[in-house]
Image (cartoon, rainbow, N blue to C red; front, side, top):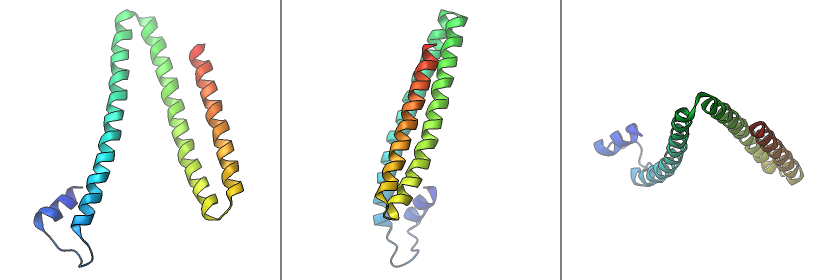
Length: 127
C-alpha cells in the first residue's frame, strides 16, 4: 500500500499499459472492505475484553469459567475457519474440473463437520 502511495505521489510511470487510476480505485475498494473487517474484529475483541473485565469483578471462579468458554469458542472458530479454507479449495477444484457431484459431496461433508463442531461447542459450554 505504501509503495502504491509512493508511486502515486511521485507520478512514476511503470509501463504504458499500467494505469494508476484504475489501480487506485481497486485499492480504495479493497481498503474499504479491509476497514469493515478490521472494525468487526476490533468490536469482537473489545466485547471479549469488556466481558473479561466484568467477570473478573465478580469472582475468580466466574472469571475462570468464562476464560474456559472463551478458549473453547476461539479454538472452535479457528478450526471452522481452517475447514472453510480447505473446503473452498476443494470446492473450487471440483467445480473447475466440471465435477458438480464432487462439489456437492464436499458441501455435504463440510455442513456435517460444521454441525458437529457446533454441537461439540454447545455441549462443552453447557457442561
